[in-house]
Image (tube, rainbow, N blue to C red; front, side, top):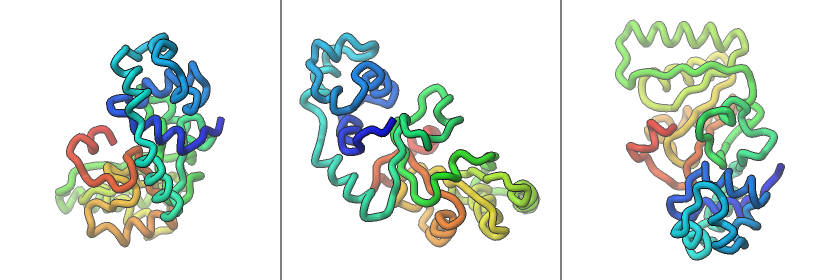
Length: 216
């Protein structure tokens, strides 16, 4: 099911609404436009929507913010994938609380390939560096997509080795997809787009923030 991206981003702009509540609302009303048009009384009938949030949905959406996000998405050749999009990652959809929107830069087809995550410390020992490089190379050469987080250390090594041998890799960011952190990985991020995809659940322009990384 394809949803209107502006309406969905507008709904996401409501403070404290969260992805689980949005999924419940769209399950009931079918589209984000219908959610935004619903009366507070109708909204309250949905599990998890209390009176204060219902009124917040009526008065809280920031359509200017949503339009700004959509402009950035289009200007930077970013693809939006909603939870209801057939290209949304199958295994992510099965997690306890998947995001309702992913911002993707690169090949979205990579998201549903056979993959393996390689993540680790930002300060690996020399032994860990060798193991990461060898393990990554072996797995990527067998056609597995390597998923990591573009952080310093093990993540960077995993992405770099995969790109070096021409494999596919997915970088899951703790920032907006247009913000590369750490900054020294900008060239690597560009290479990843050519060999896979950068993906984030965070709004365009969002910088690094401590709570983002466990959530990622």
